[in-house]
Length: 442
Image 1 (cartoon, rainbow, N blue to C red):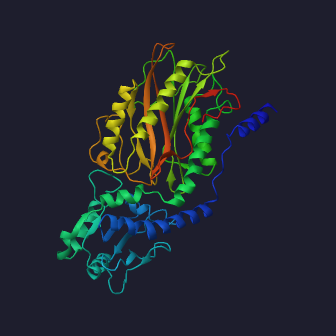
Image 2: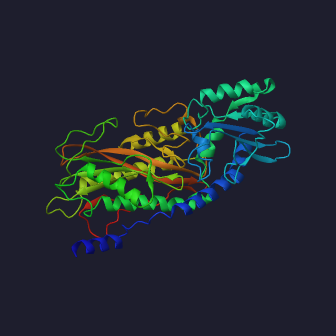
Image 3: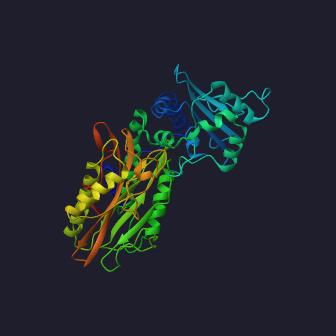
C-alpha cells in the first residue's frame, strides 16, 4: 500500500514519463522528417555553401556519419557500397537525389545505376558526374570534425582513380556543408524535441528519488544501471552509459573529468550528480542534474549548497547571454569566462551542439581541458535553428564541508532568431531524497 501511494504521489508531482511510440510508428516519423530534410533543407544548404554536387560513399558497417543520417529508418546500415549524389544545377536550380547503388535508398532517393550499361559501380558514378558537369564536387573530408570526415581511404583512392581528369581539380571538402546539415534543426524536429528532453528529465526525477535510492544500501552503480534499464524499458535508447557520482564532506577534492567515478554506497549528506542522455527518433538528449540525500532531521538542502547551485544557474545565464548569430564558439567561450570571472564564479565551460549526434557538429564552446579555446570546431560560427547542450560547472566553497564543490549542469536548449531557450526548462533547485511531493526541480 505504501509503495502504491508513493508511486501515485510521484506521478502527481510530474515524475511519470511517456513511453516511446511503437517502432513502426517511429520509422514513419523518421522517414517523414528525413524526406523534408532532403527535399527542403539540403538544397537550401547547398546553395548557401555554393556547392552544386555532394558525393557521399560508404560501405556496409563502415558508414560515413553523415550518410548514416540520410538512410531510411528501415536501413540500419549501408548496403554493400552505397553512393549518394546530390546535385543542384546552378543555372536552372533543378535538384536531384541519386543513389549509385543496387537499390533505391528508401523512397526518398532513387537508384541511378544502370548495371547493364556500367557493370562497374565506379564507372556509373563517373558517368553521373560527367553528365552533370558540376563546378564543385564536395566530399566528406575534414580536419576539424570526425562527423564530416567520413570518406575512408580506400573509397577516396578509388574515387580519385576513376574520376575523369578534368574533374579532379573540382574536388573540395564538404566540411561546412556537412556540419550545417547535421546542426540544422527543422520545425518538425523541434516539435518533437521537447518530448525527448521531458522524458529525460522525468527519468532523472524518478531515479533521483526514494523510489529508487535507499540510503545506506543503494550504490551509484545500482542507480546507473537502473537508468540504463529504465531508458530501454521505456522504448528509448541511450548513446552513452549513464554515470552517477558523489560529492560529500569527507571525500577528497573533485577530480578531473578523466577519472571514472567509483561505485559508492549512497548515504545521507551526499550530493549526487547524474550525466544521462537518450536517443529517440534519431535525436539525442544530454542532461546533468543534482540531488541531495537528506540527513536525519534535515528538511531541505543546506543553504551553502543552494548558493553553489545558484552559481551554476547564473553561469548558464552568462553563457547563453553571449549566443549570437555568426559568433564563433571560441568567441562565446572567451566572453563568458571573462564575465564569470568578474562576477566571482569559478567557471569551466564545455558546451557542445546537439542533434543527430550527442556530441554533435557545430561550434564547440570549450572543452573541460581546453578553456583557452578549441582550434577548428571552436572557430565555427553559430547559426540560427541549432540546438546545444549547455554543459558547464561552477566551483564554489561550501564552508560546512571545508572545501569546494562543483555544480555540474547540463541542459538542452535551442537557438533561433528569437534568442536562446531551454527546450524543456532547466533544473533550478537540487532534488532532495526523500523529497516533498511538490518539489519537481524546475
